[in-house]
Image 1 (cartoon, one colour):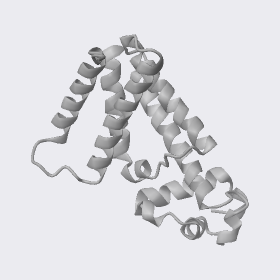
Image 2: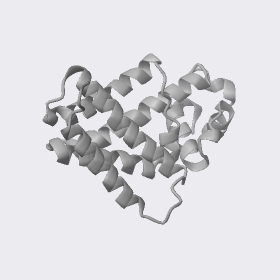
Image 3: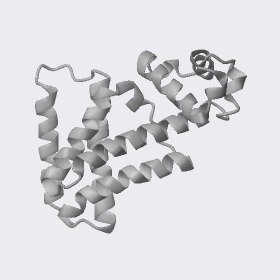
Length: 187
C-alpha cells in the first residue's frame, strides 16, 4: 500500500484483514504497519493508538452486522423477523469469527453510536409484539445475550456434544420467540 493511500479507513481495512487471517491476538500497531508497508509511527497520523484502532474496528464490524441484520428483517415482522434477525446474526458471527470476537463492548462514544444502531434494529424487530419502554429494553438484552452467547460459544468450538448446532440454534430461536410471546408474570 502506498503511503499516500494510507488513511484511517485504509488502516481499518488492513487491520480487518490481519484479524481475519491471523486472529484477534495478532492485532498490534506494528503488525498493521508492517502489512501497510509503513513504519509504525506513520499510523499515528491516522489513528491515535491501538485503543482507537480497536474502536474503529468495532464500529466497522457493528456497521457490517447492522447492515446484514437490517437487510434480513426488512419487510418481516414478529416471529419471522426474529428468526431472520437471529439467523443473520449467527451467520455473520460464524462467517467472521475473528472479526466478531474483536468487537469491544465499551461506552466509547463512536462504539456506542454503532451499538445504538444495532439496538435500534433489534427494537424494531420486536415492535410486532407490542413491547415498549422497559419491556422492550429487557427483551433486547435477552435476545442479544442469547445470540451473542451462542455465537461466541460456537466460534470457540465450545459445543462438543454430537447434536447439530443448527438444531440447537433452531431451538434457541423457538425459545426466544416463545419467551417474547409470553410476558413474564409479575409478583
